Length: 405
Image 1 (tube, rainbow, N blue to C red):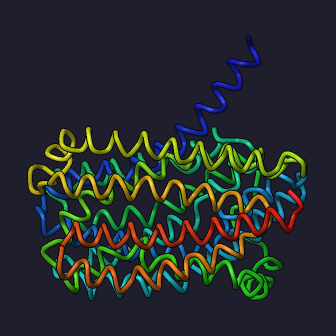
Image 2: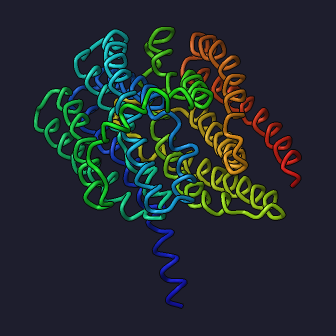
């Protein structure tokens, strides 16, 4: 009984950490819409999209395969992985964050300075997140304390300041502070270096080169996963606010669902060869089931939540909600197949899947956004994610046959 209770608490922490971290930006939305209206929200949405895309690149795909590497490593190996990851991601973020800040300022029609700071802060916050390390080490509580809670507390402070009359710029300034606090707390909780060593910094260029395939895949995936709001801002600017009002909460929910694959990482990575195919099938089925439940919940809950969340400035229609729900389901299935490829140490094959998805998704996004607004953009994303999931599934079958499973 005690063991079951301990396992339940452990699982609850795996769910709670990404839940709290994902809710952090959502908590700021009412303050943004109440003080700056739909135009302020559109600027923030564009900045979050550009910054999110930059974070995916600056993160170097570390959370894709290094979580399982941490799970397999001993204490010394984990420390080396922490230093290597911290050095490589901070160097990448130092290049990517300023670029994203400039892009966000140029794309946003209003609140350019705030958009620049929010985009740059989003890159740094995501790249410096210690969640990957503590999930791999089986310490979700440490992830909650070092990553999720600092985000929530600091962004609540930003929301309070904006509600009191502060400019949107305060949102970006707080985001720049989050990674400093997060890494400092992580180093204390995990007894880890707060700064990377000179040796790890010198090794960073070579390390980044070795991750070229995964990095290309991650960079390409941003075209249709993180940048739709920025694309819409150029082809259908009036659709940005309503699209982001549906897309951002959905992606928050999808991030929360990430607790499931996080919990499955070590289970899949440690699977004996005869049991490998069965575990992968179970993982895909669980991700699909979780996505289906979340999709239904999204359609039911969002009409009740959106008037409060967006201060009545944005109205979400039923066709848009249904399209986003389908997108959520397809993304969940795709996540399951990607998890299977990672467990077979075939993460590099994900790159071809996201390349195919991007080749389909980008022109579809431009065409769909220009002709169908927010709904057209979401349907383009459904098409892109479906292509990616199919290609990943084909690679997974091939990888299983090659592994003799």
